[in-house]
Length: 307
Image (cartoon, rainbow, N blue to C red; front, side):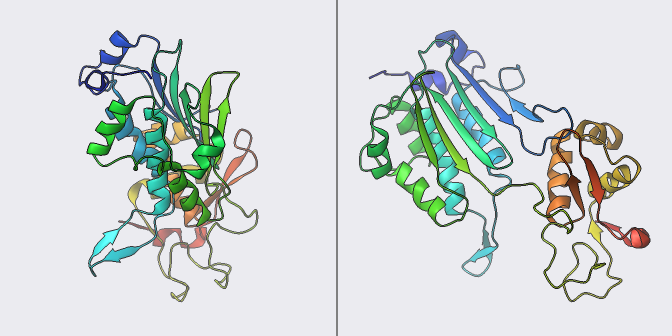
């Protein structure tokens, strides 16, 4: 079994991993919400802008892959909001598993996390040390990097021996998102875990996303179902600016919006997701050749508020 010096991998030095494991890389790609010719709109790799160690990679990427997951409103002890869900816990477990099973000594080994509109993919170099059937059943575990596993447990991540993957399966059984798929890819010496997630694209061509079933056709977006017909639409400044740009150019890309409004693309992506979720806009046609449609009642545009 490969024994890895975890103090090296979690060192604050930005060159620690590359000095010790020259062929090992970490890569995160967000390929959701793509527009036009975009290949991805968010990436974390070796670029000198962050400390290149496994802990920082986990800390930065973990919130990104959980961002679009449903977040039900729950209160603990009557006042404290609980945003965590079994599915979010399962995603963190999947990420942890990808790290502790990495073969850090492989030539050109890449720990790669991908976010798509309909799935999350966790890829790590090195084949499984147990049969896939055994991992699905649970009760057994053989981590390739036990020291890293112990360190992650010390900061609250990683399940007990053999219980991590069954926890992922159980969390996904609570939903209608599809079954997790664990692949032992012999041809490329890689393990891949695919977690289906609710698609972030609009599902209806003729109606706003998440519009109330019995809402009036011209009901304002983001207003209560029983609100007066002239209730104002509440958007923040960035969302309002996005709407104004799309009214002038319905083929604007994330980069166009970011440059015009003066914010970064991550901010644009986050607010676009909100606008799509509340039914203010939708994407028509394919990502590459499609266009944006504004679903707000333009006759009441002067009533849109900036909060």
